[in-house]
Image 1 (cartoon, rainbow, N blue to C red):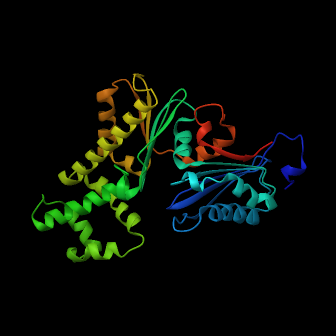
Image 2 (image 1 turned 60 degrees about the horizontal axis):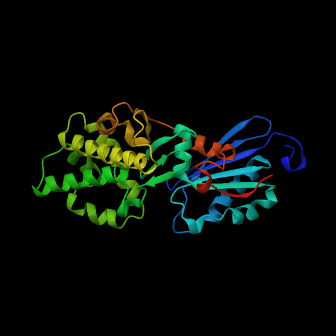
Length: 318
């Protein structure tokens, strides 16, 4: 492929979009010739420096494809201000003729993938959860504070609630539930479950995996249904809070999106929509799948003069 750096005056730009989460990293290469290729990598490690991991993904794609990449966009889970160093990334990628880097929190990518640059609120809930509200001039992030002190309504919180319900039933402190038989398939001796989980470095994803079965059982098991309904209410509260913080709470037809795996549950999705409509009866509410990678791919075209500008770190450029 001809390097974009050697084709001055050409409008075509090759672009690499990277949606970097702890569960996995999804990558899309849009070549200047119009072709598109997708790649997947293992998730980022929070116990290791972030910038070398992100640069390593770009290097791996460039070496595999032989492509020069003009602009690289990153949506990164758990990105902190201290880690937001686009200049360092650009410097590391200069040998591959990268001319621009855009770096943002994954909540921005999720939002753009669901609503583009329109105003509203997007709740993205998988293993963790983060909500973003966007108004005329403001952007507000709600939750996304991790499994220890936040992430209400996330897959982890649902899985944690399921395990809690099972142990309450086991002790006689709570109602019987079909979740017990499911958990016993992994932990035949329930009294040993907490020891196994506490010693497992992958316990967050392991616990979050129970969210799917809670959703499946919610139609027939009252305990599972209660867990999913409570999660739906929590996620709706985050959406409404985000709208209020950006001045969109008076917009009766505000756009609200719920994306991510937990919204596959009819009980959760129904509770989410019902809770939002209690406050905004005419809101435009949609739940289901969306693709944050699509949003990350939009970053190069997002105006830095609008509400997103303060939340997208840029290095280089034309």
